Amino acid sequence: MTLVRSIGLHCILVLAAGCASHGALSPGAPQESSSDFGVLLMAHGGSPEWNEGVLGAVDPLRDQYTIELAFGMADAVTIQEGVRRLEARGIRRIGVVRLFVSGKSWYERTEQILGLRHGAPVRPIATGHTREAGHDSQSREFWRVQAEASFALSTQGLSSAPEMGPILADRARALSRDPQSEDVLILAHGPGDDLENETWIVDIDKRAGTVRDGLPFRRVQVETLREDWHEKREEAEKRIRAFVERARDDGGTAIVIPFRVQGFGPYAKVLDGLDYVSDGQGLIPHSNVTQWIARQISALRSGTFRHPD
Image (cartoon, rainbow, N blue to C red; front, side, top):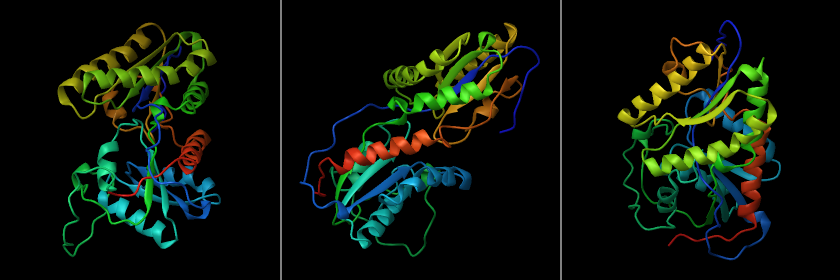
């Protein structure tokens, strides 16, 4: 996204998306040798730039681990392809790292697809055509994969990961000019359920502590856009725009930093016509995302695994 800068003093708006918490690894089969361990990284997927950003975050870890990616929102096609490639390389214990802002995102669906929880149907007979899975949620397929390997799934989302706080601080610091006249708002994608949405806000607000501690900003606030729920999104957009307008009315400027895995999402449209500053970067690119992935892998490798039922 292009840089938009208002006349006068500055203020900061930070936009975000996601939630989750630490959780215990799933109980299951005992460990085998480390040489049979590999990683399946699940990520939402999107534009070529979006996907390349995720690949860039994973690449530094490829010398240590056997890694395959499955783009899509828990899509059976890409998960099956990733599992097949890992098993073809001798992998029999697969740590599934779920690169989502919310640790709850598609967790049970993923368990069902992997055969760790009942609910996914048998794979349908092939239709003879292929498609590229990824950003379009309507293209997701839901069926149980065929696998000999055992699995362990990560449970933490980026919104509750301590590594994400310094990313926000770095983004804010790079865009700031006069923090005492700047306001920071962190906006997440947000879920439909109101109680879960409040959890998102609380988790992301903890990450925002590094922004508050780093520079003496005038305001730091967390909101969610509730992107996929029309009525709730309308209310959220009014609050978000009001925050930016208040920054201007108070003699400042809004700086927008998305708490998304990659990119600026729909926020340019939401903020159309308003003055603000942004570099349009999500959490990627940043080395802390790689560090978070490495931490998930380490925890999964030393944990326990479950075989499909």
